[in-house]
Length: 397
Image (cartoon, rainbow, N blue to C red; front, top):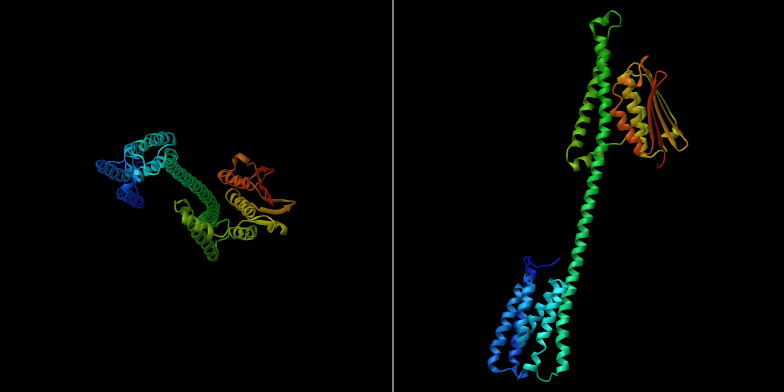
């Protein structure tokens, strides 16, 4: 990256001021040592010094206009011995700030036009051979230093661009991870919220049925204790549903810090929690039997245990919604390196798979979760029994 057209920094202006002072100091020293240049006429020294002062002043604009300044410095480089330092600074800027092919042409012009100076005003005790070696060497050294500075700046800029690209790639990956975590938590909250609402629906429906005037003739009257118990369950699950909904809304907001905090603090379910899930379903009035292989709850990795838990939860929720008075059988067992989870419940006689309402988005989301864990999910109605089964790898898929 070139510095042309870029406003110089305070540090760069300080360096330019030092170079100008050095150029003027060299001019002063050269004038004081005029005896070393006996061939220069006295009347020419003011012209030489004037060109040197102008050359020193050009250093101030050399960063923003290196090509123009380098071209103009050909004149004092050819005619003024006291302008040598400023001219070499201009050659350095050509190498540092101008494309090498272009700067090489101007440096060559500097060298070719500076060589005849020795024939017009020869320097004392200097031979032509020394002059022919000295002038190209000094100019090429200044130009090479400029090229080195240019290469260094380009390397630094390349590293900066690479670091910026790495940062952008990292931020993109981080945003993807955050989105995935947001979606994972949202799916978790969706499952839990659906479970809570189904419990509310079951208890409210049972309470409505038991307290209806028409039911008083054929059913046992509802006691206050039963009404109180149902009301407690409804209140507790309504409160929990509100909390779950609040967390779900928090996940859907664009507050990554809050989502990360929620993901870090929210306890992740495990297979051992299935017993609490079944107990909750039983308190809601479901008839649930459960068989758990003791070896099945310790071997699977955490994500598989969460998925197995969600399979049971989805099966209980579906049974509660679509077959509320049917017994539900839950079986969790290990078979080799596979974890088998199955939830079965009878359905009404004559009901087909296509007629089971609501078996759609929940099952689809669950199937995607199982697939991510390297397993398979199956569901269907056979011989009057609806079965939801998951086949998951215990170890890495």
